[in-house]
Amino acid sequence: MTTAIQICDVWKRFIMRHNRSNALKMRFLGLFFERYRERREAFWALKGINLAIEEGEAVGLVGPNGSGKSTLLYLIARTLYPTRGEIIVRGRVAPMIQVGLGFNPELTGRENVYLSASLYGLTRRDIDEMFDDIVEFSELHEFIHAPVKNYSTGMNARLGFSVAVHLDPDILLLDEVLAVGDQQFQKKCVKRMMEFRRRGKTIVFVSHDPTAVRTLCDRACLLFQGDVIEVGNVDRVLEAYGTRIGVEAAPLR
Ligand SMILES: Nc1ncnc2c1ncn2[C@@H]1O[C@H](COP(=O)(O)OP(=O)(O)OP(=O)(O)O)[C@@H](O)[C@H]1O
Ligand SMILES: [Mg+2]
Image (cartoon, rainbow, N blue to C red; front, top):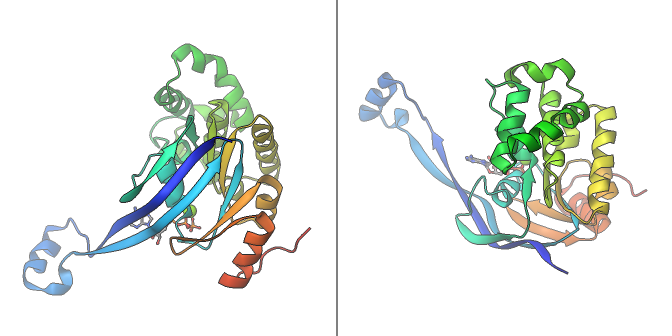
């Protein structure tokens, strides 16, 4: 079995800035008074993560808000870099998070599709060929010509997901994609993800929905305060989430 994503002792530190202000008045006051001064505080969002994800595996990342799930996806996507440690990725990644959140709000959906796909390395002709399918899957219709800043959260996610799957990557990173789409779109996404799995692709799926994790994932990984608490069998991990962290996991089907 080949490892698609090898996460080796990964640490991520963020610098939190308090009292950050560009206002001249505040900066001036800061010269005299402590409480107006900018304070910087280091915060470790990930603390020594080790995880190997095999090719063709679908792994669910679960854990409470702020536990480091999205940060880990950003690191795998190389949108962020680890403060310490290393992540080895084998295969091409089309990160939903990068595409979805990376859309330029001033550009139209169409322009963003061309921009994202060309950053991924596709030629104009490749993109021309897949463009109609991308729009059709997203069901954005004429909104594809509107600026992304006018999209709802769900519309944004629809386009992000549609672009990501049409790029046909080896590794698909999905962050809460099902949480913002309506039920009909959720079904479509799940179907696409299943198809992806069948074709031997790798999926890392962040979700707060235990049922979705059970349906889609071969394994799960529980993060808590930047640490991996439990990894392995989905039911066992969800149970650990319920008992150790105090969140009621959905009843087993
Ligand atoms: N750019 C940043 N600067 C400072 N702190 C950050 C930054 N990004 C994330 N953090 C902090 O890192 C921690 C982990 O955040 P992350 O977004 O990875 O959590 P999460 O598990 O995805 O949570 P959620 O379930 O709410 O999406 C949080 O405490 C967050 O405040
Ligand atoms: Mg998150």
